Image (cartoon, rainbow, N blue to C red; front, side, top):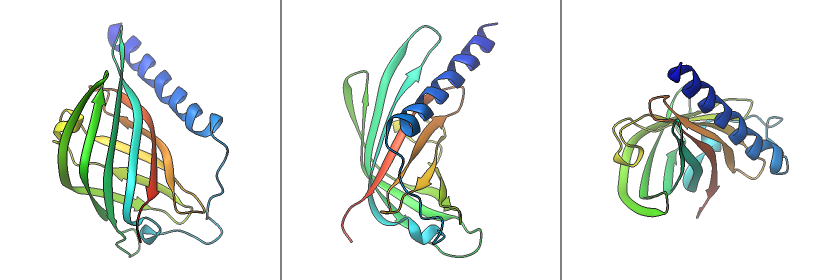
Length: 165
């Protein structure tokens, strides 16, 4: 019974996060007419993730920010790689600095949807796998929702804004 309630509450949070990202924010124009590829997400981005850690009875805000570097790997159905530096998390009002990581992967599909997968074993995510799913907008920004496994139900939204060249 507890597991069912836990799973339902986690799904509810995912839907609320999706609504907040796509329902409250004005719709962004997607570049689907031009087509997208991993090259559409290439270079340095400020990546901000806002969300919460959902428990059975409590919910704590847990937000992250970092400088992410996407390699723009090209090729049909080929995964790109990314790394993160200056990774900072704020859990329930307490800041934590996590340094950097390598080994993340991502893929941008021709319809401009994107999947970003952080490597497992990162202390910033308490060793759980975190995934981001979203779209690339006309100005090259990526935005969408984020989530982790049900064992550690972090859910929220993300925004990746290009910085530099």
